[in-house]
Length: 139
Image (cartoon, rainbow, N blue to C red; front, side, top):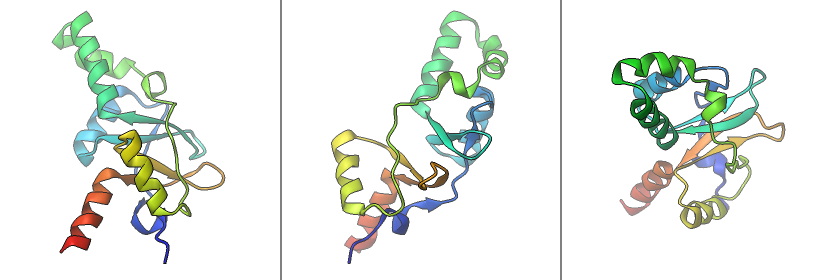
């Protein structure tokens, strides 16, 4: 039996709008305790990924060029669309898990958004999902 991405992914993940701000994304990451946020357009289509690494780089840049007191103001002025990654790989719910696992290992990805045939965000698959699967199989 082939296991599919849909068997392991988190369905209907939260996402952030491309028009939201770095401040909004920062708060969402803290609130949800996550390191990756899919970015969607007004129609629910996936347009980017925002990672903790990208956000830290921008926060450090703000701190280096301004002051700590300017951080919140600058975060509120920075749109997600201007800092999100657009060079990411998405996967479909129908893809076999063994193919995706190999891709995770070879490319050192922490997460991959799952989209339907119309590029609408339907799930997210993280390296933590694979660790949980391995733990379940080992116990």
